[in-house]
Image (cartoon, rainbow over all chains, first blue to last red; front, side, top):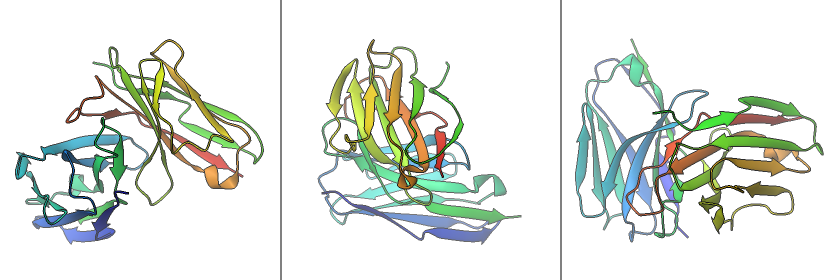
Length: 113
Length: 115
């Protein structure tokens, strides 16, 4: 059974810092990995989807990397801003048959002005 | 393009009562999912529909939870009777199809409090 873990559970940084969020998964036979953002009281917004054949994906100040063999992914946020404050979730397909997702517990990020 | 719509946004009920949540996916999306997100945790998949058929409901507590998508568009998730541990946000998501590497789009969720 696939298990997804995110460390740290919470993170507080001053504005402008570069930071790294970690995600690990137990079954390396995944087709993709997604990173989501969740604002309080809101649904999830997809940030990046990395296919298994890719090593990384970039969108603006966000860069996600994937190392299937070690069961790890990282989300790098450059020059953090208060508007980046949210919970960040990683997820992998539930059983590699479709797009049902198994999520990690999330990292709650606070960027202080 | 309109997103995934869910209602109500909030619901408070007493234990042993019943409750229903409604989801309208993005137009044309064949696949629909219901997730349960307990406070402080990541979402957990409850059920997946492809059009009006159930693809996977292995994590749905069928003694008290039920879901339907009769016409392959809107979906309803019901809990009867509710327990205290059902307090959570119920998220609906949709995607164009079931294929891998297909993005799922999430609604804002319904926050259920059982007292």
